[in-house]
Image (cartoon, rainbow, N blue to C red; front, side, top):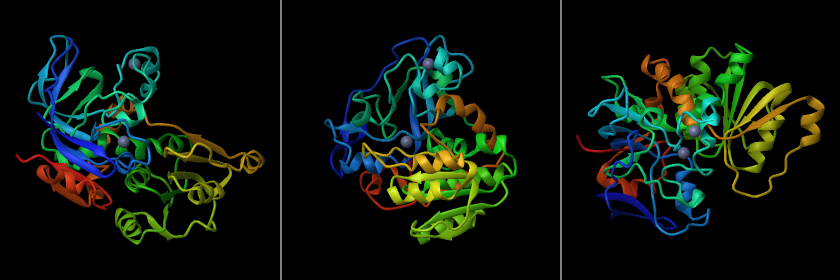
Length: 341
Ligand SMILES: [Zn+2]
Ligand SMILES: [Zn+2]
């Protein structure tokens, strides 16, 4: 089968690789229909994170179920499903308490399309077939009539945007929220959509990119143009989306006393200075960590299915499957690659 493969820094090509097969009763084989580019993908492709040979790309997508193991309940061949980007069992002690990103059954960072980080190749969604080792936990059926292209990012970045703010708003309903976008913008945009859907007060969106600010405003947020040098207010909930030091400091500086700043980014630099003295004095909580895809999917899918959250509104470029090698290297806010019908 064909697999979109990164063969070196900014080098992407289709390669022929062996088809995966079912290896157990609880597994599925799926055929991806629409695949979104995650905010991490450009970083992986750039070579900034050292590469360990060729690796499969793509870990956000909607797929059709092609085969199921005998032990799988509640899913059918032919059904469409969002595929969790993290490989998690769904039933160990850690998955059981909602921390499925750190599933006991797998080494850390066991994700599709992230071989440079984990050292293990689980395959990528820009392939003809993908093996899903825990079908019941990792596949979330897509209701009939919903467009796979609109839902492609629900595997990862939509969940990330959701969790950046949903829990904090549940603890402080109606709060004003500031998104600080100084990196890949889609998580921040999905987060702003979530905050608006969940009844936040004012949703402000700070960025130095005019195209991103225009889209944020279209989604219902208030655009705040900034170079991140000086804060323009203090907020009880702030979401830090990016990997620039000045962006992080702007986010922390914009957090109100006793407020919370939620980080969603992986900072690749080993040491990033954080003003701990200021956070201590003002009682600011700084949360950072990965989203838990398998645990979040059943919570987020109803919001998407009901139309309260419309991730398709963030997509700015839909490319044909054949175009994927070039499209993956283009600049766009959110790219989705679509398999021909
Ligand atoms: Zn991702
Ligand atoms: Zn587990």
